[in-house]
Length: 239
Image 1 (cartoon, one colour):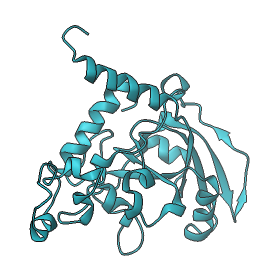
Image 2 (image 1 turned 45 degrees about the vertical axis):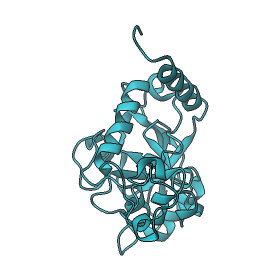
Image 3 (image 1 turned 90 degrees about the horizontal axis):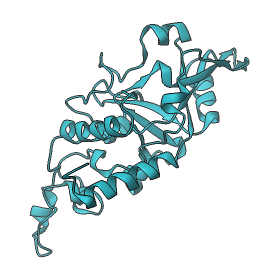
Image 4 (image 1 turned 60 degrees about the vertical axis):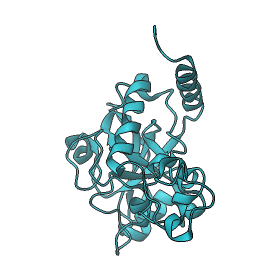
């Protein structure tokens, strides 16, 4: 640790302590069988073929807003989960015709609290979503419950789940740097998101038109890569 800035190191320890205190089980409804998920090595973001990488247009905002059909976009860089098992069960009933699986997944630091991150701009608070940046590996899945005609079977445990890796890991919590609102969105003028925008150091007297042009200070991909570096630091085997 020689030469490490003590304030930076102190913040890292605080973040790690906070992370370890937020361990939760999360849930995902899916039509694919456990064998199919195992063959794919887990759940990848739509349009991606590699875990733990930042897509060019990674965006939590685009992820929660979805496409015209209400599903995640192909390029948003996240996989959806919820902290409410009943919501996953309802998804099987409403979207999968009563047939599918509810996967129980251990939290990890790449799983971002959508409500805490987007705050008042999050329109889907009832979904209680935690979005997994870069995907969810198969050894993070604790188990699954099969539903047939809306009837639940018994939960089966995943023989490949590795509690030694994930057992003490919490979620990533609130990450305003990952919000990725569109350029010009009013959030870029407001705390906490303005700390990551081009308007961070602007004087209070800035004109309305100038404030309207606020945008992220770095690319969505760069902010996502920064967080994945943090994930690598606190949980090297998570990605």
